[in-house]
Structure formats: structure tokens, C-alpha cells
Image (cartoon, rainbow, N blue to C red):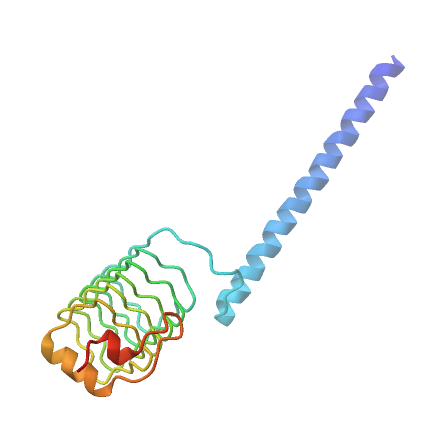
Length: 187
């Protein structure tokens, strides 16, 4: 009889231990949630940039959105309104920005290699030190864009756009080491 009593007490202690552990887990989940909400409220990232699955932002209204430092590889922003959005230091490899409004957007140091920029509006955008290697930008508009140090290796442009970009091309891309004028094939 005492063995059964001991077993019952032992079982109760194990259940209490499990409940305590679950309580700790719930508390950790609650604290993590609070930490993340405070970070969102303050507009800061509380986690390091993690690789993301490709996201679909097609036709979204994202004026002034902050994507700085994010990994957005292969995401789609087709025809999205991204006016004055912040993509500084973001990984935008293979991203579709077809027909997107990027007027006044900050793309400083962003990796736009192999991105689709056809028909995108990049007027007054900051492309300083951005890497656009292999991007398709045949009908993109770059009016008053800042391109110092940008790498345009193998980017397809209309000849008139290429001439305008060559007229203001300066600098060397810090990541690839290429001169902006050379990547634009300026004469």
C-alpha cells in the first residue's frame, strides 16, 4: 500500500514539474511576443535578418515601407506602390519590380542582381552603391536617380536612358569593385 502511495505522490510531483515547465514556456512565449511588439512599435528589427521565403507584394500600397536589410530574394513587387520605401542594404536578388513605383525609394547598397525592373519608376531613387548586375531594366525610368557607385554590369537599357545615366555616372561599387561608368559601358 505504501508503494502505491509513494507512486501516486511521485506522479503528482512529476505533473507539477511539467506544469511548471509549461508555465515557463508560456512565459517565454509571452515575453518574446512582447519583445517583438515593442520592436515593431519602435520600428526596429528585433531579430537578425533571416532568409525569407519569396513574398508576394504585387499591387500593394507600401508607401514609405521599411525593408532595410531584409532578405527578399525572389519576392514579387509587381506594380506595387513603393514610393519612398527603404530597401537600404536589402537582398533583392531575382526580385520582380515590374511596373513598380519606386520614386524617391532608398536602395542604397541593395543587391538587385538579376532583378526585373522593366517599366519601374526609379525617379529620385537612391541607388548609391547598389548592385544591379544582370537586372532587366529596359523601360525603367531613372530620372534624377542617384547612381554613384552603382554596378550596372549586363543591365539592359534603352540607349537614351544609358546616355543620361552615363552623363552622371561616378564612383566605384564597394562590393564588386567596378566603376559605375565602366558598368554602363560609357564611352
